Image 1: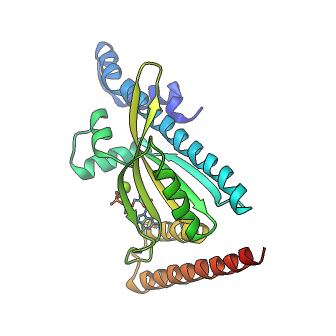
Image 2: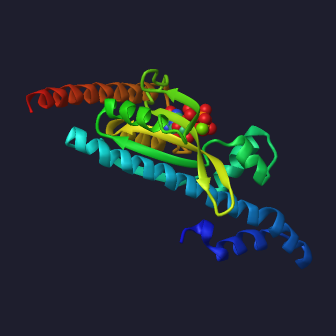
Image 3: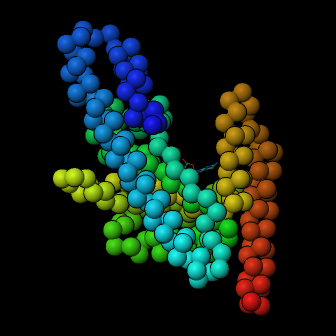
Length: 231
Ligand code: GTP
Ligand code: MG
């Protein structure tokens, strides 16, 4: 059971943080903690739905390609601290409703592929499904960020089926190749070292690494295509 389903975690987080009389604590949990926990459970279900869709596509496409287009799928639920920070930065209310209204990336699914073209094959097949609604698409592969970051980002809405209701939930899906993923992970680690201000020289070097990685990705894809023709 993760920490969102752990009652003790909630007790510690909320009860110790609140200097409220006992009677009001009950009310507080009813109006904030319980709905928050419920919303997080819904996001988790939506992530599971999206993950399953990619597992199915991977299985089916592997028959056609004779290899798995997906290397790894990672899922993450935004932490309570990050949710709080983001709502504060956006200057919107710190309420459960506000999370759903203002944040699009509480539920995140990262699909790591072998080759750049696998990304578009998977994204197209996913978006064609009739229960998926595209909210936003950012193609940082066709248009990399100035720092070199590459990835295809989708914000989608997917329904989850509860016992008495069908509820649309937003999920952020990031598609990367293995090399885009290692670059982004290392760049994130370097950039978030709080005591070091990343110089323009280092920024430029990181951008060069991203260019080299993209070049290798394309070269590997060309080799793979040649082999594919021979088979
Ligand atoms: P935020 O979600 O608040 O970051 O803003 P946004 O919605 O405008 O962001 P965007 O869609 O560009 O990026 C969302 C996510 O992509 C981030 O939370 C990161 O996971 C990843 N990302 C975006 N840019 C970078 C980058 O330059 N470096 C790394 N390592 N990750 C990035
Ligand atoms: Mg975002």
